[in-house]
Image 1 (cartoon, rainbow, N blue to C red):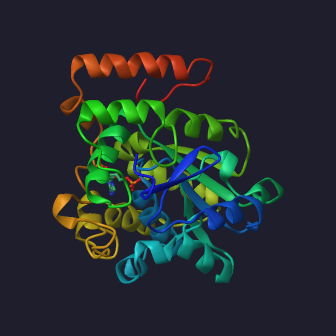
Image 2 (cartoon, protein in one colour; image 1 turned 90 degrees about the vertical axis):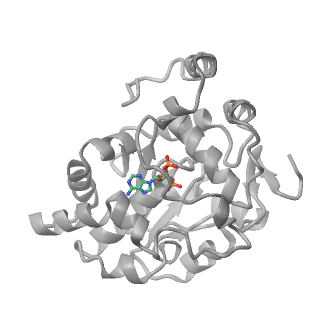
Length: 286
Ligand code: A3P
């Protein structure tokens, strides 16, 4: 790991591009969440931007003008980034925000509010592959090397935002709280309309059937890929090497099968079993 690329806070790595340790500490200890806040929380590459688009559309009753005219990162404030936190502080409620923080670094104020969190999970094998490609084009991440090398980095949690296993377990501790909704990338793929309806119920947003149709239509992979405000293609060359990849890459379930060898997938399974021992409940990929 190049020390110039990352900094560590409480054992979790963060990219130096767009982040700083003071902001990360402030967000954990002093950032005040409010009852009306809605937060889209994920481990990276679990469908964050998809959820952002969905929430942006729900926020405006299915009307796509906002998601087509305002950049994703302006619509949904990224609380642990240097700029996102400042904008979040200056924004009036209700605020739509996003975060990749594991629960132990999430704003402590959360537990004293009714702020709502939607936590989206994705099969960690697909997360690994998506992150592998993302790391080739996001300059804030270390070059991933080969899939074999990256597999070991991912399994040991030596990647930004730390171990997938620890992240997911930290959030699953909150299961049962009325203001935390667990969602998965796979459920959205299987039944996007059903997922949108559940999210609306969780948020207390009443959309009619046509409005829900519009959310579903405008949050499709193709619509997002074509949306210059959502597809990252206009992000600065300082942060992204656009020749090397794109955010809207494949958008499918199970792409890991095209990338991991049998031996690599068995190695993944062994670590998965060990790290997830004692975690109750089933996941869509089980
Ligand atoms: P792939 O790299 O597997 O294609 P995040 O938003 O958390 O960074 O995750 C990015 C992943 O979500 C990418 O996965 C991307 O293609 C996928 N994604 C983004 N929007 C999507 C959509 N509308 N439908 C399906 N997948 C989507």
